[in-house]
Amino acid sequence: MQLKKELKGKSLPELANPQASLEEEEANERLVGTLYKALSSKDFDEVQRLLAPDLEWWFHGPPNHQHLMHLLTGSAPSSSSSSSSFVFVPQTIVAFGSTILVEGFDKERSVSWVHAWTVTDGIITQVREYFNTSVTVTRFGAGASQPISSPGVTTLRSASANKCQSVWQSKLCDINSVPGLVLAL
Image 1 (cartoon, rainbow, N blue to C red):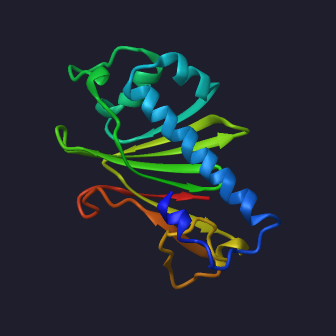
Image 2 (tube, rainbow, N blue to C red):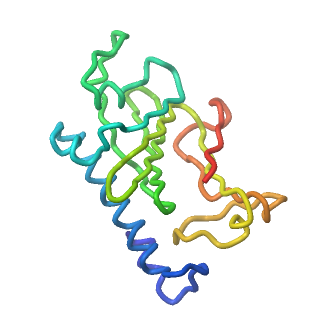
C-alpha cells in the first residue's frame, strides 16, 4: 500500500476512471491477502467464501509441490511430504487489474513460488501456481506501449516495447537454475 501512496502528484495512464481502477486493484489485493490469512489460520469456511466453487487451477512445477491444491481440496498428498504443513507466506503482493501476483519462498524446503490469482466481481475465480519457476508477466498488444496502472512497479522494456512490455518478474528464485515462463496479460 505504501507504493500506492507514493502515486500522489504523478500522472496516471489514460483510463476512463483511473481512481476506480486503483481502488479495484487495492480491493483485489486485500481479498487475496485475506485468503492467505485464512489459509494460514486454517479457516476453511473463509477460504470457501473467497473462492469460486468452480475455481480454475493451473500448476507449473514438480508434482510433489502441489501443496496449494491439497490445501484447497483437503486431498491427501501423493508423496511422503505433507502438504498440510506447508505454509504460504507472501513476500510480495502486486495487482494488475484483476490479476494479483503473490510471491513467496520456503527456506525449509528451498522452494520459491508464485501465485497468479484472477479476481472477478469480488471473488477469486482462477489461480495459476508456479513452483521453482521464474515468472515474467508481460502485456501484449497495442496497450503495451502505455504506462502500467500499478504504481511503484518497475517496467522492464524490451526491444519491441510497442508490441510487448514486461511489467513484473519474480525475484525470489535463482533464475539461472529454474525454468522460466511468461504470463501474458
